[in-house]
Length: 387
Image (cartoon, rainbow, N blue to C red; front, side, top):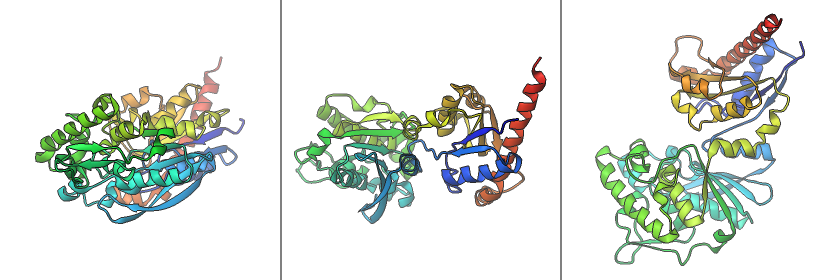
């Protein structure tokens, strides 16, 4: 048998191993069975954690660091990427991520996306004219108002004074002044990349769905959503369209809405953007097997998550796809219907989640070995089935 060509393109196992590390460990297991196989590795992400690293590695870009204000106003050193001479890729969580707050009520009301706007300004200062903003992992529910402030907008109360940072400021918001908005935005393409399609307000909006996990008390959701509705009306007046219903407007606590209204951004599915950016279609040429994966696979994985995005591209070329996962739900029917042929859990025995996450260097090579043996089994079965 000719040695197979294998592409590994897995999402990170969050809290355990990066996309790069996952691919490395799976390859280690594959080579126990297929030592001469041709193995290619691509880092992937869906617009959240790992997006900058995936794009910059594939496009030979550079990582830049900038000192910005974190969600609570503390200094944060945030990373973003520059590539293709005039393009930048930003993960909003670098400047305003949920890991930078205590996820309590006070922090949820104060958390601001101001640092994200500072990253946009830094990119503009470097001559960038195409900016891609990943919206995953946010601590904020400020409707992107902090980001817009960093770009020169002013958010004023009825007395003409600046409102407080964060969601709490939207309660007192009476007027938005765009006189000082950075004029370079008019000549800059900005794209918001996300794997969610939530509107800005309502039962499926930024506050109702994501607010409690950021620390908003469930008893405050109704009032906070009313502040966001008033804000949405002001955004509509600014840009002449109903921003509230734009798919993804509610991503990152409403940052999707602000990018659309203040920056003229369009919203794209994160995984599709990343797969195009890393040229996965070219990488799939001549491949016999694709291995993807993520930390936990369930029915939600079929809706915009990285492994299914990879699987759809592979299945369009008739390439079998195996997903290596840290854990899985009992029912994965929608995942299989989306193009994944086999799911291989990495767990090999009773263990706590913490133990599994700490033992990736042992578990993932074993899973890679299992995938290689399953591939060989399928190859032999096809030979036997031939007339």
